[in-house]
Structure formats: structure tokens, C-alpha cells
Length: 316
Image (cartoon, rainbow, N blue to C red; front, side, top):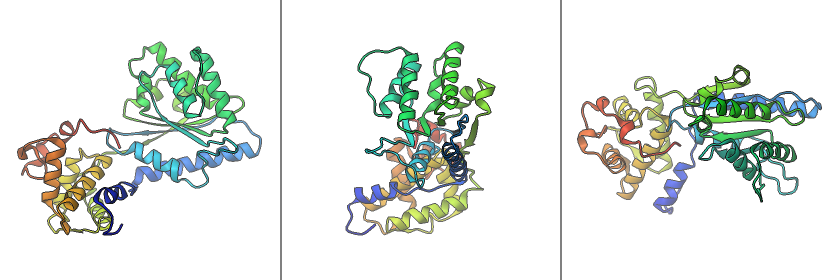
């Protein structure tokens, strides 16, 4: 990052930084193992049922960003080869409404095939499996996977589970799943014992005000350095880190968003250091709250329900 960059360019560069955590390292390790196992089986001509990963956490925890980074940065993955049509991983958000038929249509579209006429759900999923094999796809990533169970009857949920299992148990080309979602995703996984034993759960825990303070302070310095700013003494304290953690509803992804927004505030004011006033102004704009409900101002900040104030924001 250089001084000649515009503020939007500097903010975009900050957003491109990926800050991993223990949960991400677990995800990366598990995915690497399953990928290597699948490739070994293919090379040996062995067809074995696939295994899957469920990345679970609250909205704003950073699940979507983590999955996207995993898929786009993992060495050796081919996401699109125009010559061979190979696609090692196909990634898509679960559509709304999350009927089996619509999810199947959306999956076909992610694989590069658009239906020209109406088909039954069964036919669509048969086509999905054919296209997964044709594109040599090893994993399907469904983001917001908890929506697969939204408003489903027990019978419909069973159909969803059976469809997911059929992908992993395909007799010719089994495909693993990467499911990212909120805690409700466990409803799908635990609905069927056979599915549960095929899925490795990885949970994104909430941040702890005391335990994660040092790590948050390091992140503040990392992002400020990239923005060519220093960190004011008032910001580089454990007490401020606790305020920041609480302001981000104790969610890692939301916290990163707040840090970047505060740095943008500082850059717009031509500041040379990141200060509390930048966090205060940023949160006031973002949440539209009075200072009495601003965790960077209020003395008793832990009483403030930051999640409610940030409800309009999405996951990261």
C-alpha cells in the first residue's frame, strides 16, 4: 500500500487481507487431508464414499470469508479450466426458497449448465451428479447451508439429507461437501446418524474479552501498518481491545469489519494515527446509535447489546 493510492483503493487493499485463526487452521488441515485422500483414491482407481466438512458459527463470525479464502488459495486447486472444463470445487450460496428442486437448479448453474426447460427434482439432481463427474468436481461448497432446513417438514428434511448423502455415496463419482452455516446447520447434520458420521464439524467460537485481547491488539497493528497509520496509545490497550471485541458482538468477522471502517474514518480525516475517536465516529454511523449506546463511549459498555445494533449487517 502506498501514499499515492486513493482511500477506496486503500480500503480495498485492507479488505483483501486474510487474518486466520485457530478454527481456520483446523478447517485448512481437515480440507487438505480430505482432498489428498480423494485424489489418492482417484489415482488408485478406487471409489469410496466421500467425507464432508461443516463450518459452523454465528453470523458475522467469518465463515464465508474463511471458506472463500480456503477455496481460492489452496495450492493445486483448479476452479475453472476452459480446456478440460475441470472444476475441483464448485461454490454457491443456498438459494431462497431452498427447495430441493431450486437448489438443484442453482447447483447446475454453478457447474456451468443452465436448464432450458422444466424438469423434476429427481431428474435435476441426476443431472447434477452427471455434471459433477464431467467436471471432475471433488467438493461442493454450500454457503448459508442452514437454509436447507428452513421451513422444511420432517419429510422434506429427510429428502434433503438423503440427497446430500447420495452425492457422497455416488457409485461412480462421489463428491465431498463443504457446508458453511449458523448453528441451525447442526439440525441437518444430526437429523441422520449416517450423515453425521460422514461430516467433520469445525466451529468458529466467539471471541473472549480477556483471552483474545492480545490477539486483537496484534490485528490492530497489522491493519494499521497496512494503512500506513500508527496505533495511538489509547487504542493499543487490553481495555480497548475488550471494547472492540464487544462492539463486534464477539464475532471475528464483524470485528475485522469495524477495524477497517475505523481506519477508513482515520484516512478520511487525514489522521496519522488510529484513535478512539475514529472508532466512536465509525460505530455511530454504522449503528445509528446515541453515544450512550456506543461501546467506544459508554463506561459500562458490556451492558450494550451490540448484536442488536448491528443486526442490519450481513455475515463476512
